[in-house]
Image (cartoon, rainbow, N blue to C red; front, side, top):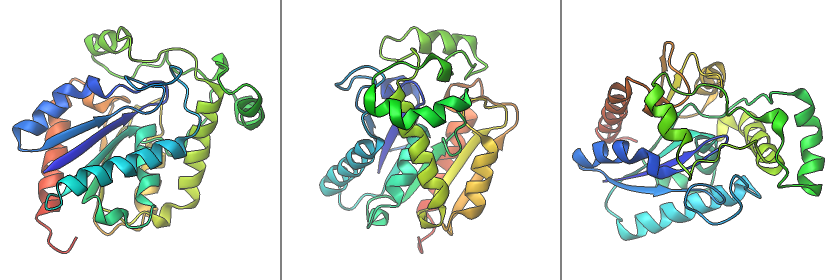
Length: 259
């Protein structure tokens, strides 16, 4: 069994932070691959800068093909957090994606992102062409709490692989673009998915997750809202409960033969 875990946040990406999650999955017999997107975590490129999230979608599909080619008899699941959830869902719209993954797990997906300042959405397409790497302080959300566990916040923001600076204009513009795509193409998502969101999340919108769940074409889908939880669900004090919910859903999905 292989479980590609894939974390992509609004301001940072470092799949190594998910070692605890990976070890929990390993203990249940799941192999795990992690991936950092361009310009984030351990990947090459200017820190915090992604020229196009379509490149990340393509890389995701390529890695899935690499995994399934080497393990043709084993089902694969894709995990995406925050903007990584949006990338996973756009990947799910690609042809023959249902032959690569058995299901998608999403935590706090970026489905209806609102800039902290309205002017950003207006100027982003222009400025992202002229000054794509410019850091736009007016769109910075790094000061918003993402976990109720103080130790996890310290660990995250002291990690040199975690980008904590103001969002770069092209990166922010790409996030807005991919969320607009999903809003217009929600009916194209037919792959089984498990969507989780904290109701107190101030980075991504839990109401958008509810709306997406209702509108998605997938026949096997589940939504779970965690009352009062923040953005980084797998780093909340109740992370063991959340990991168990994920494992239980995977087990249920594998036991449904018609999927």
